[in-house]
Image (cartoon, rainbow, N blue to C red; front, side, top):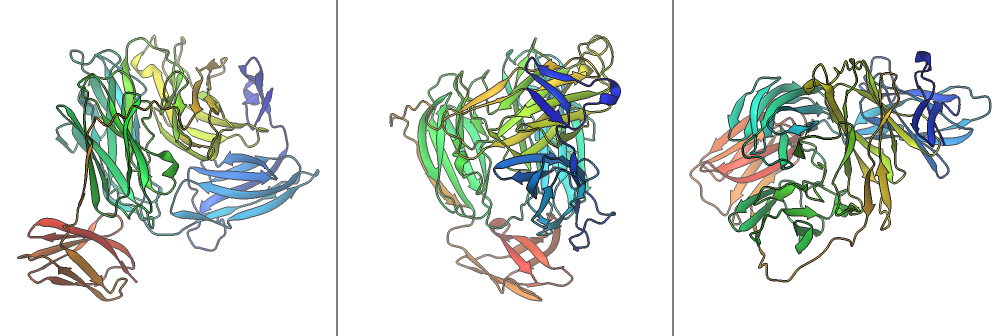
Length: 602
């Protein structure tokens, strides 16, 4: 089997990259038929002007009949397509929610003359709003040694964000040593790092050095660390924003689910697992500001309790499913630990290790049992780890990853890494989609010279093809090329899709207790009229008596822009010099939060 790629460094006398005994990489199967630019349309003329900037993470789709091919843009916002003859519909797939392509699609015909055609797209903003993203991981956590967490962050929105900062909550068995940027503050296990004002499209990275405790941590124990970037507001219309917290209280596990966004349009199912068995289930339908608490008695054994939500509904709302409660030391990653669905929260869970295979492929969620059962429509996050165990520094590294046809390549999102990299989807690979990740230069020292610095990794997430049938198998492995050496082939990470393969043991003896409360006090009704408004609006409170009302107003970047106080039950809000846009507010009565909401200035 031959896999067609765009560039295999033939100039460097490496004309055949052998992936395995049955597959080899050859130069393009077809001539270059198309090239173009993808840029942000700064002057709204739907033309790719030379001074306009590209947007990272954009994927181009070519469709001919039922056949679909993909390619990605390079760092200069350019793409190329190596295509067979025929008529193609070309469209843009972007992971950035505040942009839309202009035009939405274009059509070309490739004939036997193979004249190179220029097809450009521009991305126009649908709303002016920041969109902060964060990702965190470590290549390895070695017990009794210092280890690095790598944190990447970006403002992938259309507006600047002011005074951004990241909170990193370390696992209880990790000790903070130092970081590559100044530590702003610490409260318990939470460490705050200021990253400043982030313009649209601006990204950054830093590292945190930690030590895995040598006395109390057990070899193979799971450690979970979370990063949260602020401001964490979303400007998407009609979007719930659900988050989950967990607490272990002696013989009870407590899950708290709160909705900070718009109301859920319908009920969604949740499950509670004890280790790998469903012990209870129910449904959630929360309105804005509602909080659901779920208490369940634990068995007293060294078990892991996990709450997760049906992934079939994830396309309709943002939901954090990362709720794990472990009343005892755990050494098994929960099978349905999900990938990060909220862009401003990232969580890394991995086992500390002794000896290990330095070049491997890991997947989250792991899946249940030896067949790695996974529910349909669950996102998958892959981590490729590598180590230079040679006898000299590796100048560059190429990773080739042939993505399964059961994965939706248009949903690909590249993530955090140990070293800077570029990536591309090979411009034409027949019926295969090959992801190429390039570290050039990387200057990775060999393990004999500097063992700690000889490690590296890269992560990416991707969706399944929609509604895969039961027992569909998704496999993924990678070929790692150190300079011009023969590739190192990783293990094959795999999942088996199944919607009814989770053991269930619901006896009714658990006596689950649930309750819903409101963030807004039940008796309080708050009116804002008119809304939208041009010059002024009135905020009026009914159903409560307060000595003093205070309202703080925030723009879409999370920056406080105005504050009012009143000893009456209403406050008149003047526009003054505020520009058009969406604003949020927090209303306090006698210094207690009683309501949050939004208004629009026209």
